[in-house]
Length: 416
Image (cartoon, rainbow, N blue to C red):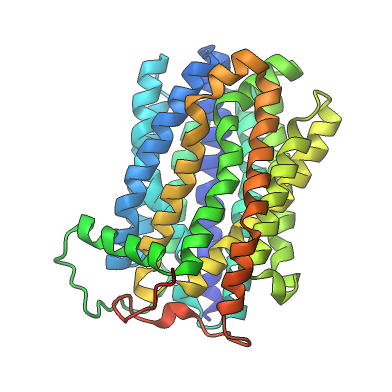
C-alpha cells in the first residue's frame, strides 16, 4: 500500500465532496425550496430527475473505471463537472434548475463511482482494505460536515449562487491532486475495450447478481437509501414547515450530520472482524432506519440535532462497511462495474419513495412519512438476516486475501 497515494485519494475525496455536499444540501435544496418556493411535488420531481440522471451516469461510469482506471475517470469527470456546477447558479426558475441539475448529476456519477472504486487498486489485504475505505469515507464524512457549513456561511454573507462556484473550485483542485496518484496498469484479460459499453455493463450485472454475496450487499445497501428517499422531497419542507426554520439551519444540521459520519467512519477499523460480514451489514442497515426515526421524530431542534448525529454515525459505519464487502468479493477487473451497479441501486432506492411521498405527505403529514421511511428500511433489513447468515457461513474461515485480485473473466461460482 502506497500511503502517499492513499492520502492523495483521501484529499481529493474531501475536496470534491465538500463542494458537492454544499451544492446539494444548501445550494440545490436552498435554491428550490427557499428561493423558488418549490412544493413537495416539485421537489420530488427535481430529486427524481437527479436520481435518474445519476443512474444513467453510473451505468457508463462503472464500465469506464474498468477500462481506464479510477484515477483517469475521476480526473476527466471532475474537469467536466466544473461548468455543470457553475451553470446551476444561472438557473432562474424550477424548469431551468431541473435541466441543469440533470446534467450536473449525470456528470457527477463517474466522480462518485470512480472515487468509490479506488481502494482495491491501492491494497491487496482485507485488513488494509478496511482501513483504506475508512480513511476515504472519513474524508467524505468530514466534507459532509465542512461543505454544508461553508455553504451556510456563503448563503448568509453572499448568496446561494456562490455555493455552486465553491463546488466548481473544489472539483478543479481535486482533479489536480488525484492526477498524481500512481495505480497499477489496467489489464484486460479476456475482455477487450472494443466491447460495447452496454455489453460490458451487462457482464458486470451478471457478476453482481450471479455471486450471492455481491447480490445481497447491493440489495441491502439500497435499503439505506430507501430510508433516505422520501427525505429528498420532504426534508426541506420538514425544516421549513414542521420545525419552522430557514435554509441556514438546514445547512448547519447537515454539517452536524457530517460530524456523525466522520465519527462512524473512524469506528470501522476498530470494530470486531465479525462485523465485517453480511450479518454485520444487516444489523447496520436496520439501525439506519432507527436513526432516521430519531432524527425526524420531534420538532425540537435539540432532539433533531442528537438524531442527526446518531443517524449519521450509523450511516458512517455502514457506508465503508458496504464498500469494503463489495471490494472484497468483487473480481478485480469488475470492481468499477460492481460499484456502478451498487450506485444504480442506491439511486433506485431513493427514487422509489419519490412517486408517492408528496401524496403521502398531503395525507398523513411530512413528519409521519419521514418516520415511516425509516421504519420500512429497518423491517426489510431485519427480514434479510437469515440470508446474511447463510452468506457468512459460505465464506472460508480465516480468508483475508481480496477476492478482487481475480480477473473479471475468471470463472466464478454463482450461488442460487
